[in-house]
Length: 473
Image 1 (tube, rainbow, N blue to C red):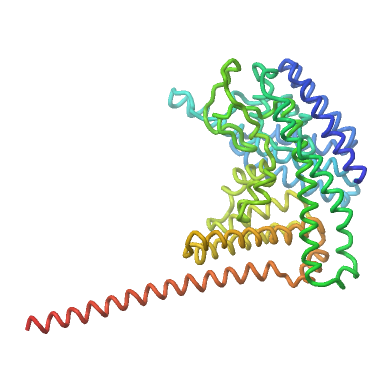
Image 2 (cartoon, rainbow, N blue to C red; image 1 turned 135 degrees about the vertical axis):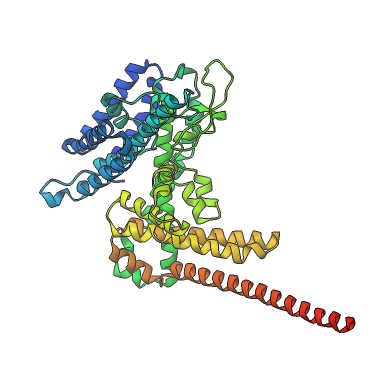
């Protein structure tokens, strides 16, 4: 493991016992302590580069105070433009940010855009209440506009400051005001989330040692057999998954220990978004609680769901919620495929400027179009047994598609990514295009068949009418 990874590991490990201590703090003390601890982590790991996140926060506060009506659009513009500056600071003679500063900036971008949208919704609902003289039925909305101190506290809250998960300001506010945090579940769900982390970590270290990513960039790798080169991407994606499974499960455990994102099961919470229906917060009632609001990974379904589009839902779940609510609905296109492509482009930009991100993310809409074409033209015509076989083949190809796209994500450079894809003859791109063509051909054949059937019926009706006319005469 690299020194940076050891620092991440240390912060994650320390956040778990610290979280249990936060359950004993009053709301004002909890807010101040979480801010102080998070800011200390930022300064200790980012040093002078902490100013980048601070400038971003101040910019959002100014936007909210000066023009809450345009805050959603302005916040997205401000944070994404600043991300560009943040990644190009060396062009201006400034020192490059640390990886820790990059991690904080990424999470902060999500938080600030979400906050601006929450403030906008708060003011809009407030106006509706004034005009209709009735209380707004909005679920999970703000009760007041946050102050600069509130925004700073939310931005630098120690929980998930570098590793996620993303959570809304309202989730943070609910955490501060929990009536009886010590009575909420803690040890059991925390241990449940941590039980497989040692397995994920051991598999990550072992497989990464046997199949190092650097080997892909060597001339020797290109001399290997085609099937070995294909298999290598399977191993690389396995290492990639194990690394994030361990990190995200640990990050979730840190939130669970503090009680962050804990809501009654009947609130029907969504990862990232929180409760979707009204719920009772009475701590004396015999409610069952969950931590779905801060769930960032569903390891089982990531591996064993059938479709490419479903795989995205179970991976980095809180960020997927953010993309679904703030990017996808505002895409400048109406067609589903184009909207998906736009969302993936924004996701790639959020991750960074490396070409590998764009090559990988923009392959996803192609794979989604391929699976949709085959489902509509092939699977729909099969019986239960045939559909079961189809789903197994579909799952196998889904995993290979993610293996394939992961190579762009980890190789980063366009040349390295294309060289690898070329070494396996762009196999997944070709399969996806072939599936689309086959699906289109079968649909066209079906339409032609329907037209032919209609023409035959019309001819039959004409002949029948002629015969009827002859008998009448």
